[in-house]
Image (cartoon, rainbow, N blue to C red; front, side):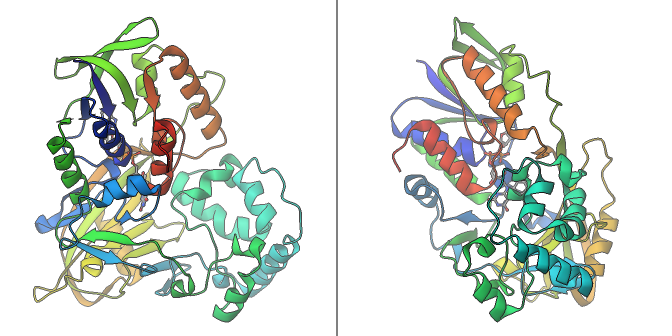
Length: 448
Ligand SMILES: Cc1cc2nc3c(=O)[nH]c(=O)nc-3n(C[C@H](O)[C@H](O)[C@H](O)COP(=O)(O)OP(=O)(O)OC[C@H]3O[C@@H](n4cnc5c(N)ncnc54)[C@H](O)[C@@H]3O)c2cc1C
């Protein structure tokens, strides 16, 4: 019997496989990795403590039907529920701020801050204009001072590009989109003005109203979700092949009729749902990539998982490090999430770094030195162990051609093949759970 092939067991692939299985059609979910979940996956870190690869929470946000599928495998006894804002902190210009994970323009020298405020206010009444680069997006909303003094070094740290070489959507990734400029009461008042609300952050994270519920497992990392989800899929009759990938496709006209797996197996195909790099699929289908656009560049995700004896100096789950010269951009303290600093006094966490694919692995000791300089560990502490993990090409650099490149590649693949759907980041650059679930719903034509 012909099967629907779903490639990639990240969030996108899991959700597609669940939706197709629901219809009763045979489904085979394939992932080249031996553990599932992609960036929503976990591993065993130092001392066997669970650590995550990218995303750290399952969120109650997105099309309802899909969120219901996500939640159905989460036994409330095994998952901690968080409402309101997560405790986030930030580090910038040598200051650790325990009250917010957003960038703080108040750390600029006074003259620059006032210049930035003046430029921001001058723009409130201006008509929105077309923004073709991140530089123009920021200059048109916050003015050149904030753009150059704050965002240029932070974005360069993440993507090794100038603002003028990044696309307008580059901010919709791992940098909190709003910036702090004013104290609590004033920021609350100014955020009532819609145009300012788009760019200003609350001074303290708890001023920000949110009703999105977040979940983290009591035991194991967030990848527990993917493991349980795949068990559910298997129970429903889907086949899951981890540690395997598609080696070739046989086409008849514009239809894929068979696919060969690296393991040597050949599968009769009804339809292919592709949630991973479209370049791999384009190559298998001999579809030419756009040659008049510069090729995409990527960042590798380098993770330093650590365990130390002591106590965290913050209650934050996430700490953003906006210091331009310091490698890690975000640190997650699992012990704060699960409240597990017990009698053994062991804290564990992960420092996430984005690096050039051509670069050698950074020294974990240098990353740990940064965390110590940030003041994350209360004295006395003893670092017990670190492990590292590198995810190659985890993130495409959001340059000026990101969307055009992806759109043309997607058109070319769909022009070559009638029974193949690109979904999630395979179809278009997008970031985060909500965007991915929206895309799954859209491509599968689900009513939401
Ligand atoms: C550094 C970083 C941090 C992030 N943090 C967050 C966060 O905190 N919150 C949030 O909501 N989102 C975050 N994201 C966004 C995250 O990418 C999405 O939320 C989501 O998890 C991505 O799911 P996906 O299915 O598109 O891809 P992935 O999670 O990347 O999954 C793709 C899967 O496909 C497999 N695969 C790849 N190529 C092949 C192949 N050729 N054949 C077979 N299998 C293949 C991989 O092994 C992987 O399991 C982060 C992203 C990055 C890069």
